[in-house]
Length: 62
Image (cartoon, rainbow, N blue to C red; front, top):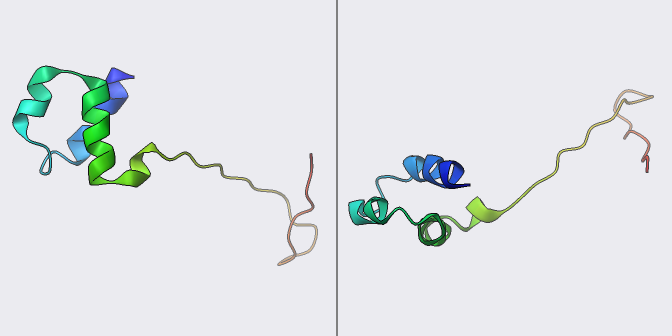
């Protein structure tokens, strides 16, 4: 988890004060990242399916 948090922080390094890196507290850094961009904490799901007819939505499967 720490590696992921600090990896994401690199993308925002211009917005993060250097002292935040010195404390090495992933939870604190993650809260700072969420303040910068609230979409960082979001999850998403991608679904796909085979179209039986071109342009028609794929049937829903459960």
